[in-house]
Image 1 (cartoon, rainbow, N blue to C red):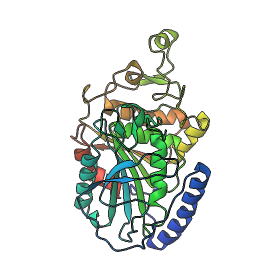
Image 2 (image 1 turned 120 degrees about the horizontal axis):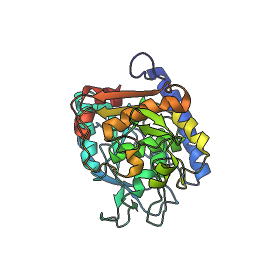
Image 3 (image 1 turned 90 degrees about the vertical axis):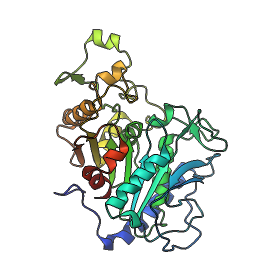
Image 4 (image 1 turned 90 degrees about the horizontal axis):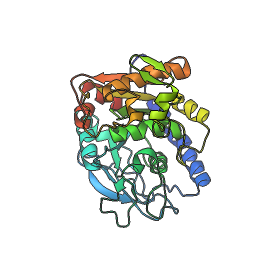
Length: 351
């Protein structure tokens, strides 16, 4: 999928075939899951894509009794008109503060800088928590949305299922010239995207961008000790009994992540195109860093943990998967706005 440059993209002639194929896949996935993927009832129109976003609601199927709140510059509701101007879709997942609007707006500003705002749809699902106003909308526990747990409303829909359905939705034919689909997240959103990339088998994603997460899903029981990767001793395991439990490891996974065996999760993750986007100044022990013993076995801070995980991949597969890359952003700390508007961030999202 990727060549000598950071990304290669499908040729314009392949776009129609891509969407026909993926619309069929989306319908098949929906049938298996028991929900409907509806094609837009209005014909595609050349509506301009703006650089500002709007808070919106959409339903995600007959089994979703509450609506999903999201922020974007393009409607993806069931009855929304298609848009042939859209060539890139970025599904961006917010951080721990759940500032979906801020994440959408920063991503749109990056699209402006890249000269792509007129052809980019930015969609930021808003994973509301118990602390937010959530009447009639899906909501999760404060920690549960980050790792794919079920929602607390009567839908009981995993936050990872939500993203699966959004991925299918944007490929249902409403964007006939879609050329690039990116799933990105920063901080807690980066945690979300990294784990989702292991658990999901959604088709059509061209890049998963994992930016400055607090921790990673490790795919074996080995951990870092200084510069050495090794198994924990018995006494170390006793001192940190849940170090290899989900979300940090593969034990005691939730229902979504336990749908397939651990080996299948490893294979899926290796097959997906993943860019680890790391700010070289993201070295603080604050900013909501996970300081549990399980997380500290991955490194002291976000930058160290990202570098460690990328190096760790070789121990899992023997070599770094061909679609996985580490890209460091100089002099940027824990900031999605700084990361996405950097030249490295713009290249990761828009190619």
